[in-house]
Structures are given as structure tokens and as C-alpha cells.
Image (cartoon, rainbow, N blue to C red; front, top):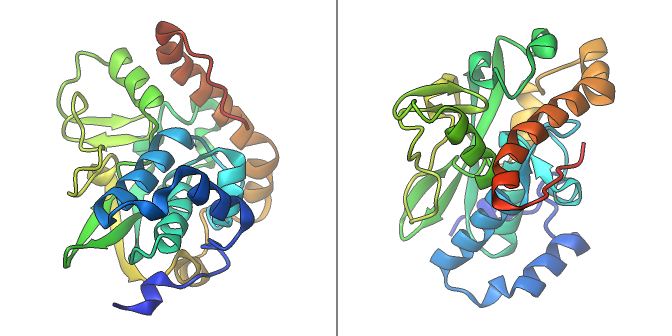
Length: 246
């Protein structure tokens, strides 16, 4: 066992009261390794809604408090939960083409997005092998809404936070195998890191300066409103009233 893949960091702050309380309330410590991963994965996938936080490098406890996140921030929370449960995990850094964000990010603010956006997935160690986890990014209500909107697109699809070879049935559920939802949009592969802290220290985050301020203060809230509208199309048909906060 590599203790580096279990260590706490500023971003992976799993000793935070809220994270420890969640684990205790859900009884996840009593599960076997396979189901510990599945419980943490499913929680981050569907109970933390798809949305845009103030920055990629925020602490896992802040993602939990927000109740929403995207690839990088939901990954921060998933890694913290896995390490808190004694499961080894590591960070794999990439960039993705901005085109896969079209639709999720409204056209009138799309100019803010870099051509290639920092992206990541989580690799978890189970039964002697590393498994790639990326399919947790979109909650099921949001994904179902996009699938319904584009119900003629059964195969390859790029947009709305998705880049997959099979929109009708993407590999997003935990079954002990790799899961993906944006893999087909990857441009650069930065390789493996022990933690997101190491990655962001080296590569930085997506925005800086005035663009970062605009994003944090105004634009991400507009994006989250748009994501909300997309999700609500699915929720209304199911009688739900989800409301991701911005």
C-alpha cells in the first residue's frame, strides 16, 4: 500500500467535520472495498449536482457545502471521500476541447472558455489494478435531460458537458470498471499526480486576472442558471424540483 495515495492535503481535507459526518451517517466505513468505492462514487455523481464552482482548486469540504461541481471539483470531493475510507486513489490531469462545453455554457459567455480546458479524472486502486473514474461528472437528472433533448443521437455526441461514443448508454455507473463521460474530448494528457494540489501547483487553473474575477463574480452564476434550466426539463417530467445553487 502506498500511503501517498491515502494522505490528506489542503484540497483533499477529508478530516473536515462535514466529510467525516457524512461518512458516519451513511455507514460507508462498514462496507467492503468495492461498495465503499461505489457508495462514494454514486454520492458524488448524483447527490452532488453538475455545476460550476468558483475555482477548480477548492477544498473537498467546499464542494460538499456547495452541493454541486464539475469534473475537477467533484473529483476533489470523490478523492477525499475515497481516502477517508482507506481507498488508494490518484489524480490524472488532462485538457479537453472547449467544444464539449457548448450548450452547458451559454453562447453569450462562451468567449470566456479557454480553447483547451483543464480536466481531470480519478484513478482508484481495487483488487490490484487502477480503475479510471470520470463518469461521475454529470448527475443523472442532467444527463437524462440532455439524452431526451437529443434522443436521435444514439452514438457519438459532443456538447453540453459530454463527449462520448454512445450518448444513449454512456459508461457512467460504478460496476468495478472504468467510467467515462468526457473522454472523447481529451486533447492533452498531463499524466499522473499524487493529488490535485500537486497538479494545480504546477499547471494552475483555467482562468486568471480579470477573466477569473468575471467568472467567479458573474459568469459562473449565469452558467449554473443555464445548467439548471436543462436539468429541470428532466426533473419536471419526474415531478422533481431540483435547484442547484449558484
